[in-house]
Length: 362
Image (cartoon, rainbow, N blue to C red; front, side, top):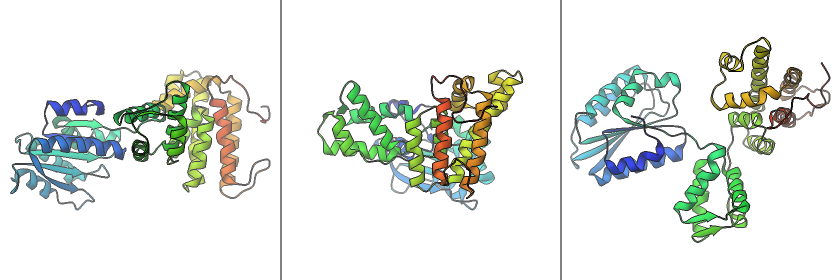
């Protein structure tokens, strides 16, 4: 049974199921969902809890099976928590999980709680996860994307009786807040709590938010790729500065930018050969959000522009490895910034088909 995170509290009020599975890479949301389940379980008499963490191939699965089959000495009901940090229980673990799920269906003295990371499609199609899906309430906890972050912040503020000012000032406050905590939801939660300690319930001004919220944003190269393809120049600049400050590898950042340029060119070439855009995207394994970004950007990208961007990416590759290029900065991060901004400018919403500024005609 699949359950949306927003439906969890209403579900728990109706009663508990024997087994719950939480999977996702957002620690705050996983922690909050697990705490809600544990609290509901304690209220219904599940007063003892045992935790089993799978750290390698030599994990003793018999301990999990034995715990679910034995009565506690101190409580009538117990919670058995199984954590698989890498999401790969192995062959023996997969068989044990299938057996464990079956055993939980035959009793009401034990509640199972499984914590998993984000799982890929292949892992989710395995027999052990299929058994979990069939016998458990499964909740997938996805990170809050940047576009949804201001609303998430506003909702969290409302839970502690606070709100931003109405109108443009309020939107600016939420946007400022989101920029400062992007990619770090746990820190965002802490900054929201700090506002609750600093100011009374009621309306928060832009000045109060700006003075209180620290810059705790965390970025990764995949989010950088999405921001570049979306044409979000200011966000791209912040992300590049943040990645540099965090010590991210120049080579990895270059790989993300160059791979997007290569993918855009491959799809554009396929379209020139007569393939429809949806088919060209599928053939090049462009899915999800990136698929929508490609669909918006490609009609405005000239083939010559993509060729020049690919040539620029080749030059920046050399710069990141210590080579000098005429008319390019010697510093790798400065070169990456120029390359990112060139691609970002071409992908910006409302951009008309045009050549790359400063590029030679083809």
